[in-house]
Length: 324
Image 1 (cartoon, rainbow, N blue to C red):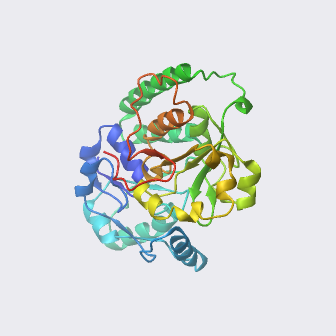
Image 2 (cartoon, rainbow, N blue to C red):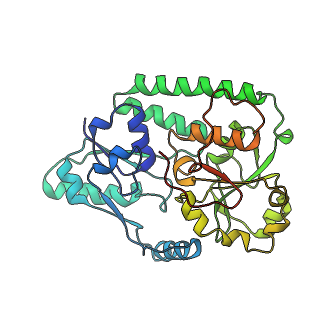
């Protein structure tokens, strides 16, 4: 089977299914595991290459408001690779080429060539459970059902051990857990939804301002001040730690920032959101471990590796490379 992936999370699932030898093409954002970067690139962004949270947001919003796609798909190269399955998503037009972007265009293009279009497999999970269900469905479609079931079973076993180590039980009252606000964009201020509240819960926290399955949304600084969480997690979508460090003053320079309880208590943690939180992929299990380390530094975490400086930092981040 020949597979093309237009979604970084899908590429990572292909890797844990031991099917990388069948991957023939990738999106420009597929960067993990590093070996995939040698594959042909099939997409490119159509919005300007801006720096800074506000500038990126405005550039993206202009394209969206004009009804334009945020990504170009190289249909010539895609067709020449002759994939049997193309992995894409129908969830967020900002994050990657979407099903609506490519479905009609690809079918028309292939029909003009007199060739049958490849099958499109679309991911659209909105909770942690849905992420795993989608991975299992993908495994069945790619003929790797047993491989992905074994992988998930091993991670679930480790997750149960982590819960036991930090004293988290099914009957634990969420109101008794540390409250957390997850900042997914710095300017404008946005909180993370979808699977992120579940990831926080699995790591022993209680996410505020968003419920599992909710879309990420813009909030006011007053709303953040009113929630006043015990802990702040900063995980901008698509940003590494060094990119977050570049834009840090979008948070720290705001007059509300120093008044927040988490800031005053030095309980602000910054993550490589691009690698561990923003993608509905296998590294969400690592995100749970990072959450548990931030919230329960005094507890044993059942063999979980300590956070590396390029995964998580406390307080104002310094420049750091991408995860190994």
